[in-house]
Length: 268
Image (cartoon, helix red, strand yellow):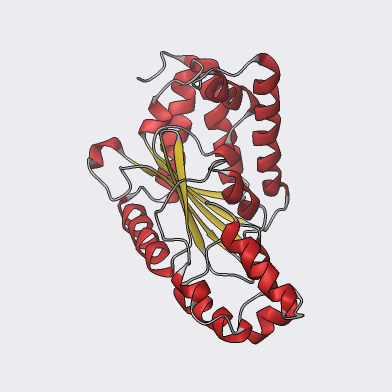
């Protein structure tokens, strides 16, 4: 979205002589939430915008001209979500066709990024791989964020990069699950339709700001922070999770699939 809204908020805050923390206190918000709005990474809820109008004596400008949910697509559509991912205390991923970015091995990430369109040159691909691997460093902390990965079985069966890369990738997820760093559940293909079959989804919770959701499709992504939309997406995730295999059975599927890729014909 355009950052005109956030820039205008910052200008009005500074004109009123408030720091971000002071405005947050007066509007019953958090400083980080104010910071994200001013930087164009978040859209305030209608209730937040009305309180900001009241505190800043701006009539109904902030509430009336609040960017509409679903209007437009982020130019760098994952930029804001990536920034928030680093601050999250809980992340719940759903993968439809391939592994979530924070769980990818270097070889798997290189294959995914190298096959994009338009194709990346070698230098750009190297930079993209480094950036993706940098995201996974949030898993180096043994406790935070709490990460759940809900995987459609299709993400395991599609041999991205070939048997060796897939075997390594699935073993990496197994290692994370066995160390209890990531909780993994598999939605079996035999289930058929489920509530998340339309796109990938990431849900994020934070210590000092409202939860958000991020959905992504072909050459587009959307960061959702409307409370009603986030709640609806959380409900979809919960419904799909209720149909997934339990942890122990999911790990059994992962181990069997990794073994097939490593020691036998890849499953397709």
